[in-house]
Image (tube, rainbow over the protein chains, first blue to last red):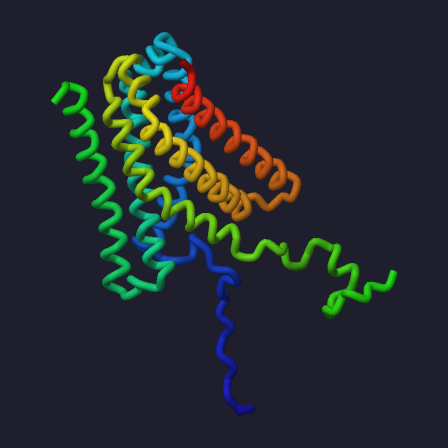
Length: 137
Length: 132
């Protein structure tokens, strides 16, 4: 093959990373899983604060209640609920994959969409239930 | 300095250069999954408990949290989820922080944060359960 022309050397990335791959839903949701995990890490402060406030007494708990009733507090709590549920459902999806199931082209997309739709639906449902409890039903 | 027990092919330097196996195997991976599985029912239970306390006054919330069943569920939820997030943040740090000194510092901070938040929450639950 001495007379054949050597193919032009194509410049390939040596270590393909996020900026090389075309965005795929499964990839995006993998990133979201990590982001929600990191958010929940700091969200644990909120849980600890609430529990300590209950133990500390009515005055400290009053501050928690005041904060949770502000728009900012509500948004934080709503985001925390979604992140928690999304990370849980995403975790179940990862456990299914850990067991070796759900790797078909249709299955993995379906599982990924189901986690997102499920987390949004469950969050809305839980907040609806929360408000029903609050008004005393 | 003959090491008669040493049967491997690695040189003494190789063994002390911190470049070999960490001898921790799959423990990190396994504990991440173990706590993940435990946290599925525990998260559902903890969310249900929190919803039951939604908008309630201090006396009612205190009463709910001081019941043994609620206390045990909350303790299990706190311990498993804090251990899970400690492992998870360690993985994130090891993935993105490449400077050795900064990595060690952030890994330490991760441990300090996780233990502080975890013990504070556990203390609050125990206080609510046992204080007369």
